[in-house]
Image (cartoon, rainbow, N blue to C red):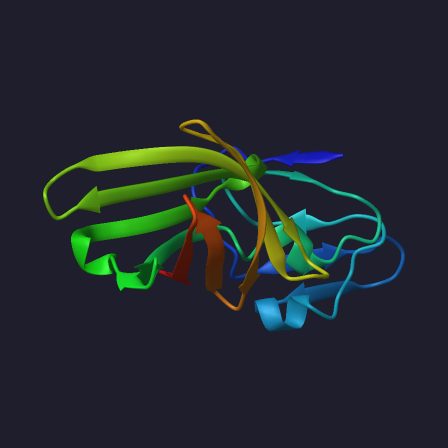
Length: 166
């Protein structure tokens, strides 16, 4: 079952969980959504998203609170601070598993790297996969409470990047 919304944007401040023949539960915050599940039917007041629903999905899983833009707080490559070379470095997690890395160097060069992702609610981590230049990427990183921590090896050097949700 899919819910198709007609307008653009997202309003996630109010969810209404309708369980036929039982009761209606109004959820006003993501914290409350953690404890409620909708075993049969749900109505979500939101715009511009397609939401596949399964029996037993929690409202938190449907709301996908991890979606959004994450700004780089620090970037170390091979032990050297490289953040100072960037005007910005961002990761955007979009619906349908799309991930977009965008950057602008202080020298003016801009770039985009499109990848894909999956979020694991139990492990609270993101699996990033796809192709960048000649590299095939398939790695998992912790993503919890608006913080994405990327620690990996690239070209034989340690990369340590922290992204915070905007």
